[in-house]
Image (cartoon, rainbow, N blue to C red; front, side):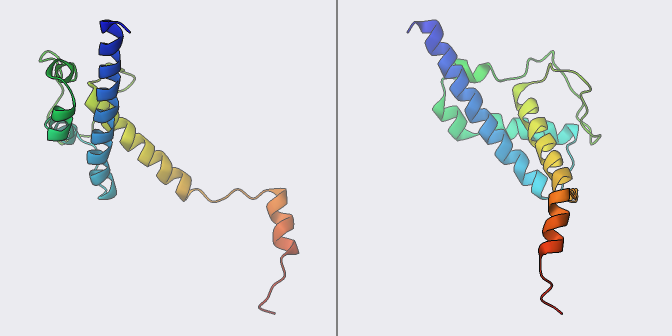
Length: 132
C-alpha cells in the first residue's frame, strides 16, 4: 500500500467519524423539534470540528481537509437552511442536512396510514370479534 492509499484511508476514516459526530449533534436538535437554520448549521459544524475526540483521533493535515474554505460563505441567520439543487456543501453541512432529511422522511412514513390491501381486508374479516 502506497502513501496515497494510506492518505485516502485516513480521510475516509475521518469522514466517517465526522459524520457520526455531526449526526449525533444534529440528532439532539431533531428530537427537540428545532428547525434547521443557517445559524444552527454553523453551530453544528463548529461543534463537530471542535470535538476533542475527533481532533485526537486524526492527524492535523486530515482535519484541515474538513474545514470550510473562507471563500465558501453561507448566511448566519435564523432563516431555514435551503440549498436547492446545490451539491457544493461543506462536509459537516451535508451530514447535518442528511440527518434532518432522513428524520423528516421517517416522520412522513410514521404518519402515513398503512395501506389497505386485499390481504389485509381478508385478514380483518377472518379475525373473530371477541367482544360479541
